[in-house]
Length: 392
Image 1 (cartoon, rainbow, N blue to C red):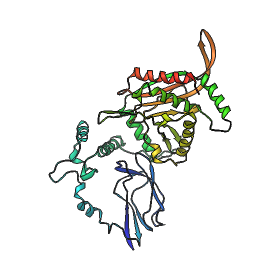
Image 2 (image 1 turned 180 degrees about the horizontal axis):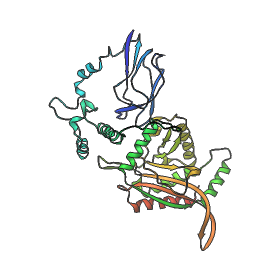
Image 3 (image 1 turned 135 degrees about the vertical axis):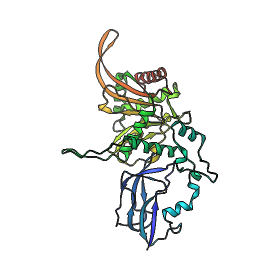
Image 4 (image 1 turned 45 degrees about the horizontal axis):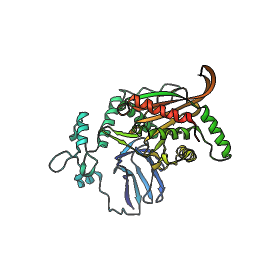
């Protein structure tokens, strides 16, 4: 019997580390080749890793909720299958055998791009203390991010963990919930949010929607969301600056011609944002179909990782729980998020007379570094006008 060490692979898109979300095996288990071993979570998606060999599990490295860097050991097997790459060296030998991964080259100079150096200087981080994970040991932005996360954990860690009182329970925050918490904190900490609320008279649109649904019979039912997305797309044509990404470290605004709309979706695991790519080329029926398909896949945990990335602007809605107003948090590197509140009937003064209308608020947030308040208000006013025109 030989020992085979399975290491965390590079799952693409520049991932330097991943979080162990769920083990599918235990020490002592006999596993087959291609049998699921573990679910890991990167910044992009949750990925299931399968066993590359058949064998006996003798060691699992890392508990659920811990992070591992690419190339670190995950599972040790006893197997009859020899490692195709040859015998695996011990970790310390492997480190000696790969001097190119050190943070300095043979001349002793720290390897990092000018942008990374500038960022490190602004954060008072000594690059000589960081081991780079890039090619030939280059220090990447991800390496600085890891240092910041560690400092944040150290700074926020309580001096002592209080004992559990009677009638309480501790719930460990990890996996998607921890990822959401980190992203939301980072968004609020780094982005100056400008939130703008506007009311929309949805009476005519609701009449149109009811008529279209009646004509479709048993077909795909139209909710308000496809109409909102279409209004957002049409308004972006007049206000293209909101359909952008902002890369703070590079000082670059990347403006997009296609509109890739993220749909904030609540799931049992937390909030996910599946994406309708190239939404500008789709009609109401296609938008409704994509919303239903993507939301169902997200709730069932069956989303394609490609469908969870690439959004250029996000629409979020709490449906019937939408309330009167909200302060949605931007999904970086985007610069805008459109929040849909609850539709209600209420009295409105029109032409000096009080009438009952179906009203709905839009609560939206913008990155105030990129979108000025006037431009944000003008964009939302355009969305309002699109909705109130109620075209099929």
